[in-house]
Length: 259
Length: 259
View (cartoon, rainbow over the protein chains, first blue to last red):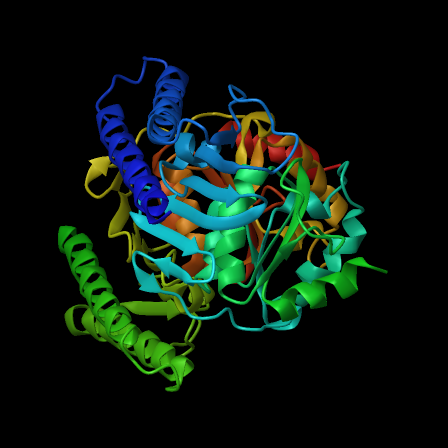
């Protein structure tokens, strides 16, 4: 199955090259032209490139992604590609950076490959089950076991203000006790940053499998843990909360939340 | 006074080159060696480089910055350089990106020059009073007048949880109503991002003049507004809250806060 890895990376690099070219052209387009048209065009072209590229080589594989062209699977049997052509759409539109192409490959319920590609920084994070996690081909160190009080946490302010998913008073003490919080706005990238030791944890109340699956394998391959805010394992079949970091960080956060 | 601008940019570029070299070396240093020693060494060297570089050419200018070697001025008379050798220290240490060298020059109480240099991205933002604001030499467009409901706001989760500076209930509705929030962790850079249209506003309860002065001129030169969360002008002499964005964004935020 080694071909899978190379094929995925090849497709993602091609997508990245296309996006960078389009971005560069966009700077020269008259302001009057519709920016959102260009975004839609790029997003759809990247999705086409990835989906066609996968199915041409692996016609019996399933693809599970945001765009809804493919049916949501009922089970995790077979080989499933979790695909997010552009994770961090608002960053893509406004910042022209800090968005990612994210792909995870699951075989019969087991995450086997995870890829997160920060297109503008040209940083490819990848993990293979049982073989570690890498940033641009360089093996990443195990995640450092920091408790909340020594941690920088990626968590959006949304989750400590009134919202429909969680009592903001549960997470607010984390903000008080942590060294600091950050909000990047692209889940797959924030999980990759946890893997790369740039931050210590990631917490959200609302992710889909294609948002977190690739980052999850990156983190697990480095000794870390990814689950729901209730401490459960991921189902990969529905929207979920995500709590990710080292074993110690995740355990520590659960003591805050499970009161 | 045109020499001032070129001198400042030259010093900042030299500082950036030094930092990138040191960062690169750091990747090859044994993990056991003390990381914080290296950080202190880089920080102090950059400060030396900037302060000596300024005073060699302009011995009668005042320098106002974090490190405390220079007395805090009582008045804004004369020429004052607001200097932050490395804004975003935690990002510098952990992420090795998203930190900035920030310099503003004030002459007799008027902000005349502002420079924010994202070292790892090699992005130099600069503004000259009355002559516009620039990103790597390319003139930036006027800031778009978005209200809160259409805005992406840079604001740390700290300010919507219990803290000593502001009632979190005042700012929480902003998080609910905005398109999204981000937290980069480097004030000067977040203000530069407002100027560059990557986000629509920046809000904090705690900045020093060297954190915001350069970014303030960038934003003002593009038609935007920077003041305190109470709607007052900056004093440049003490710690303050900062509310920055387009005229419309700032006015809109003030209607949330002044209840």
